Image (cartoon, rainbow, N blue to C red; front, side):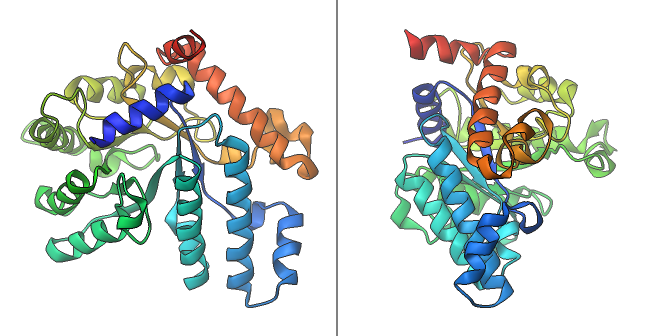
Length: 316
């Protein structure tokens, strides 16, 4: 089954395109988790990995009934070494076991057989047993050229998985490369064209293909431009919340049915107890803060984008 079809079915079932990023950071974890992890002993890396795993598993328990997709950031797990990589593997599998779709944020990208190995390692698609890391989708860096995307595309099509190609990222310095013009066209526009062409080849009669694009909410004009340029491309929209993007900034990424995009929030959800409107919950009630922040994000997207139709359809 086409990844985009699986994604949209899950989004419709939950009634929201909200996506929670799993970005565990040692210095921001609740003290109870650090203390508990330390009592089991081991190196600091092993302690950190143990705490990250419990943190993420407990987040999954809070959000799984309302969110369709999660996005673990592999770098935060890899920072703990082999123990962290094993924690990442278990967190992904736990999310899949709860019926969630998983986009592993690894930003992989390389040539030939190396790209094939990355794709086999991470992309499990519809069968979580078919790859070591069991992800439904993987973020991919296109900087080495269009030919380096093909191994990821081939694996995604084979297994019912997806990829999300970095097109117009949300970070402040992204324009240094992505806005560079060559032959009257900006780099991000050219990458977007390549992604859309790949989808037209793979989508057949489907509205969306399995090759997604990462386009930040921090650049809403470009988001609208790229949505028009890539009508068959599912979007992953970072930059909402902690990076300054609003729900209104994401609106252009959706189609009239409220589909075609997922919106990521990481720090604003998983560390909601630390600052802002949910800090009143305090560290001892960090899970309740996550619950409240998740509800607020779902309502915010429903109020300011066509994703509100998903809520109406679910209620009906």
